[in-house]
Image 1 (cartoon, rainbow, N blue to C red):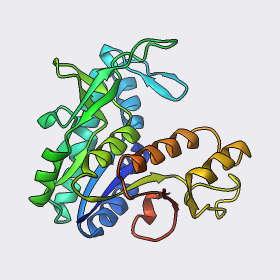
Image 2: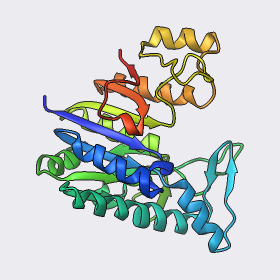
Image 3: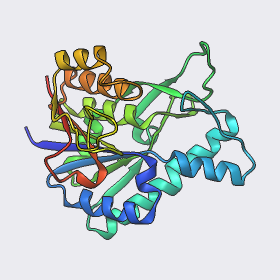
Length: 256
């Protein structure tokens, strides 16, 4: 099977000129088929403030009311996405910016209200790997924004890690997929105060042990759970590394 790399980068990397330029250079240098998935939260918060819209967060997740939805649609699907696409075109990469609504590539359902009403936030229901694979084989590089739709005319704000995972799973039937989550550290650390204590490889059994021992905690737990789910669904390998190291062999590699 032909190799395909799905790279997920947070907003922080793509929102600043210097880190964006380096990322685009590194991403352009990746051989073979590839997909880029990006965030953009800080730009959305900044623009919302300029428009007089307050950003509400619960446990680090954005509450997306109707006004906030307009802002994230503009920022993620427009400003941040097209800026990346234009930068890739300048580097000879034939990029195409997509939200989940474009070509019905990712459809979601609005998150049900439990303790928290997240508003217009989507939980992914299906991703269309066949259509994406057709585009990719034609030499097009999808650049996915963290937005999906419900099939009934509503856009939904959707976590970029989820978009990356679902896209990688959907493409795993067509390609040998490696999913790379870019992170602000060199990988999963044995000691969070020591940037060089990267755990080079994690199996499901080791993961359970690390969580029990308190080595892996907080936001890293769902990231790794997503990674193992992706492997179960057919992705070959998941890597957690620095955005500046996507062409190097470092980071934490997650395997079955």
